[in-house]
Image 1 (cartoon, rainbow, N blue to C red):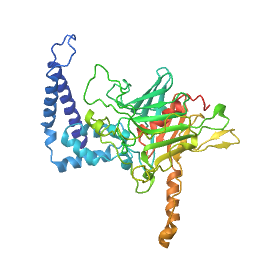
Image 2: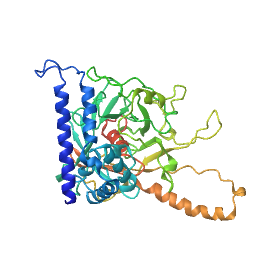
Image 3: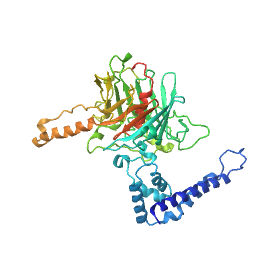
Image 4: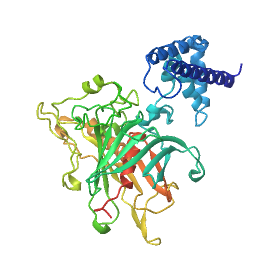
Length: 447
């Protein structure tokens, strides 16, 4: 039996099991006329029966060595979408297959591929960019993020990743982000976060449903603010919104100060993540948040809300400096700060230009490139350092500066309602998409 036939049989068997479980749930309903739409008593037992049927499937009894070899070949052979859906289908076959897929399929940081939905909240690759594009629908105020499947962006549909819907309020604007393109609301199963702006459109805060590594200092100010639909009351509804990043635009009335200037403070990513041995701590293990008790355990009522609010602070006063800890007297770790790359003036074209390497074709005030802001130099104690370490400092600083000059996120226009979005480590697809949404919002004091 060939390798592709094995994968085909697994997908077909899994589909038949899904239909069988659906028929069991239907048979447990009080009636089939449509008048009884409430939950039945047998629906819970039907789910357990379906799990037992899947675990008893013949494919679950394959030897682990053979199964691991099959998964490795599948991972290496199906490296791009849409053929990569076979990897997802194998991971959904049964529990044994899923555990092996978790060990073989690496995160985007190391393999540069988006495979499972969890990859949307994991950092991008270190050695390259993940190329995506955003489609805008002005009639419904919605934005859709797709993964590029070919270099020709204008002639492809792409792999859907995320969707966002703009909701205009009296004093602010809110963008709800979801993995469900048909139900973009805070009460849907696919809700993963949101982004909120002030009235002028100069300050934005990005909220995540997953608690970051420093959730104690980023306590949610809206712990019970999420609306729960009356049709969906479940113990797994997330109740916390964690402010993980803030985007600030400098005041620029009538464009007198030149192009836009923006600064992103990633409170969930430490500045040390850009070091050669640095990591992004607190990466989620699942896309959707856990039950109520897990959400409450990850929050600390006594902690301070350390995100800069929507006050009238200057652009240069945004977080990015070391703050002393009042209790222990130690310095907190700096958050990662991203700044937009300053464009240069082109004399022949008479416009501001940036090198997007062919990914952007239309000039727009929304186009930007983000790089890491230079970190303030620490106070070295020269007397306590040996001569060997003092001589090694210039080489380490040069490598650190080259990492800070890399473009971490770039966003630009290609057609009227289509924009490209390319991101890399340490940003995730969710964070990059939320930052790009800030460029769409109306800015009364920046244009």
